[in-house]
Length: 294
Ligand code: GLU
Image (cartoon, rainbow, N blue to C red):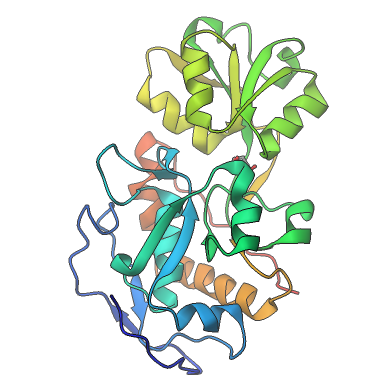
């Protein structure tokens, strides 16, 4: 356990690379996020409150390979979101062993933030106006788009969202993916709690397609490449943000945006991408510019 320490209000954070070996039990990828000795947080902000805690609880997905994934038997999840979370926690002064990982599914991200079950959410969490009405979302730190995952034998029949009319399509309750496919493309939507449950439905032929962000689907296709294929072009824009609470805490939003920009500048973002989503053969993109906090 980390000892409680006073909040430092340094104009510029003094960064120290973690000397601790970051093995499988501490953060998965082996990448070591810098850890701020004196987090640059504004007094009275949620970020300052978090920096004074002994540990930080971060809500992440645990069934999305490449993004947020917990190997059976492992203590710590791996993936791009996990690296982003490790970096932001590092800017708040936390080492990987001071992070408590909490599984979130698509539908409980807002309530988990509102109720304080988690301090932050880094969980393939698209920024939307509706969500920004009830929680804060800083970013984006990554942009992807909704696509389709089908069984290999259907890849000529289902090639894009216009082929979905009356097709049974699985997606997740509380996701932007489910809303888009139901409202815009007339699919017979089958809502489940997680995308891994959807993929099982596709494999056992209970549904004929799964839809969500391409980045998520690529991870599942890579797990069963003989049987599953991602088809068509992206048909939405999903801008991943970091969830925090309360939404009007501009200083905390700015703290997270500064951390995201610092991750771009020092190369951690690109290294993290290559070590996670990049493993499936996707080229490292240009990082997106975060929205202004206001
Ligand atoms: N990014 C989309 C969303 O936040 C879909 C992925 C997910 O459900 O996590 O709704």
